[in-house]
Amino acid sequence: MLAEERRFRIREILLNQRTVSAAELKDILGVTTATIRRDLATLENEGVLLRSHGGAVSRTSSTDFQLSYNALVRTNHEEKVAIAQEADKLISDGETVFLEGGSTVLELARFLERRSRLTVVTNSPPVVTLLHNKPGITLMSTGGEVLRDTFYVAGNWTERVLNEIRVDKAVMGVTALDLAYGVSVARHAEAEVKKLLVKAARTRIALADHSKFGLQSFAYVGPVDDINILVTDSDTAPAYIRELEQLGVQVKIATVRRNEKTKCDSTRIAGKAPAARGGHAPGSRLS
Image (cartoon, rainbow, N blue to C red; front, top):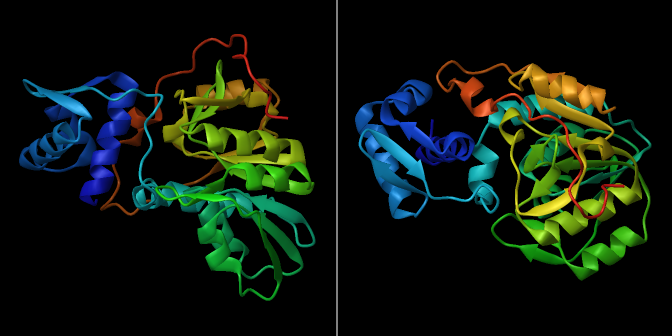
């Protein structure tokens, strides 16, 4: 496991439980105590945590945590590939599909490369780079302002395009999904794109690995039940899946085939059982 991915997993754990011991991290990540100490020292220098005797305490707000694009692509990569492969089954030739910017959606784009008679609209520069020369795909880009750290296109130009189109399916990534609060993301600009995307799509498909559940981020998008289909991995807690299905969301579960060398205890990161369902937060619905 790369150092950057290890440190991201430490951040995820601290988002869920706020404190963690070095011994716990050693068992979860499968590395030496010395490695854990170096990782904690690095994260302390970045302002993420405070080292305590035998462990660490989080200094990062769960609402504004945003990782760089390169780190996002590598994090939970096996889960993202499995989710993308499952999502590929939901897309049919002849459809018009919006692929939103995001690392899991990019993995889906890789499976769509050999499709025929597929129209793809996207606000993702990496998706444009991947699909621009594929003969079976008609590719359209929204244009707009590129958010450099996440390679995500948003802003007024993007919103104007989304107001003027309708697509068969929109495939979106998820930053944070809390069953009582709803879907939220780290940036207001991204939240605005998602709200318009869902209005533009007949079917809304969300891709979210187990680490996204039980979290709330800065910008509210809408309630969970405005998602039609959610594709997640087999490490997502069954309680979340039951609640989603009770809300009317169709859940597809992708089986992850892990490389034993990179396997770690994802059950802890998957989070606790969902809170009791409550009222939706104020703001626009997803649809």
